[in-house]
Amino acid sequence: MTAFTPGRLDRSSPFYVAGHGGLVGSALWRKLTAEGFTKMVGRTSKELDLRNRAAVFAFFERERPRYVALAAAKVGGILANKTYPVDFLSDNVQIQVNVMDAAHRYGVERLLFLGSSCIYPKLAPQPLKEEYLLTGPLEETNEAYAIAKISGIMQVQAVRQQYGLPWISAMPTNLYGPGDNFSAQGSHVLPALIRRFDEARIREEASVTNWGTGAPRREFLHVDDLADACLHLLENYDGPEHVNVGVGEDLTIKELAGLVAATVGYKGAIEWDATKPDGTPRKLMDVRKLESLGWTARISLKEGIESTYAWFEDNRNGVRD
Image 1 (cartoon, rainbow, N blue to C red):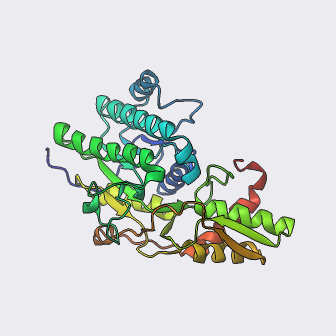
Image 2: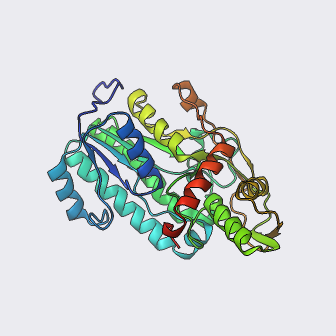
Image 3: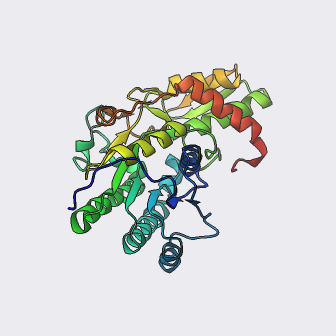
């Protein structure tokens, strides 16, 4: 591999954010714009279907980005993953392969691939270290999505090995923030709780029933912190191993529900349906590698939930159903 030293990215070079309209992509777009990048490149899924290989190659040939953040993905919660495993596997693999192959063909210097903490085995030791990848069976409820993301990590490593390009991967923990998916069927746990408790407050419902026991522990990272970490990694890290991005602290889903209910102003009873799946018992990231590179999260969970709920209230009529 050709020697490469990470450093400040050229703010005047074209930077393509794949998935710039999504939760992660929009946060990256905000961060990069605020940092002075002047040639931002983005396309909606209607403008460019990243599953269409010919269209992706034509786009890269035309735009010639120097940097790429691959944040485009088909994502969803436990129900969506269990119901549509083919979509989560096929769509995500196609997106990743097409973008990375085109990025190599047209000379992308730095590419950051974004995955998910679900890449780790269901019963891996806690906290989750980068080295635990591929050491045990995955969580069944999102196995297809996890396999797709693992293939993305492998492709980045293969590009580094075969072509010597300084591409990297980052694996964020559970994310939330403005622009999240608040749909009843496709959202992750935190936005789902915000919407559920908000609707229960408006309807003055006596109780709210959530899936599972509430016992699993989860870690949550505000998407603006993730965006900050992504730029930090692009300018400070080069290596084949993916890097965990998280806060290094977790709480139970039951505790999270209480925090969301208090933020929303719901005062009814909170109940649990233990017949529904809990998912992985615990997913806490070991973030010592990222901390050794000089980065730590700054937005507290309480502050983040409050700002996310404020965004939800301002955009209530425009969120996804």
